[in-house]
Image 1 (cartoon, rainbow, N blue to C red):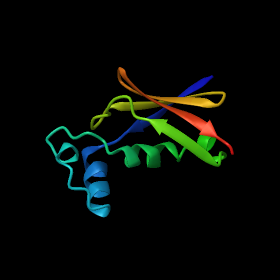
Image 2: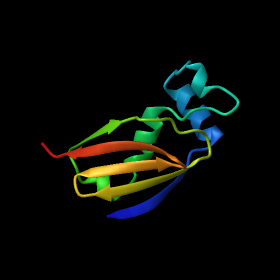
Image 3: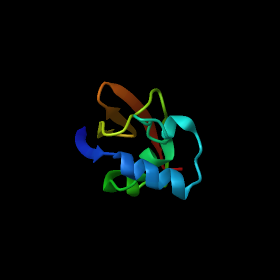
Image 4: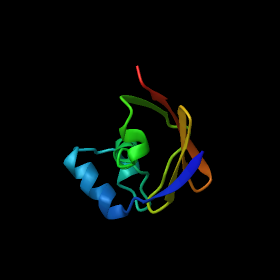
Length: 95
């Protein structure tokens, strides 16, 4: 099992992303915005430990807010994303 800091998603990155995808959801546009799920996925796919797989599945159990540290842990066929105290979990599907 290996945990690696993926970084933080800034307010500017969120603004750029929601403009590019025409996202008008207010939770992504507030003073302390929630990071869009697809932006989290885009960030995760920069990690070579996930790029080698054909499919991944995510379950968003909680939210990630702007500027929170994102950590990725890969443990066999499961991976976990931690944003401060909250977790997002996923499975690697190679079929």
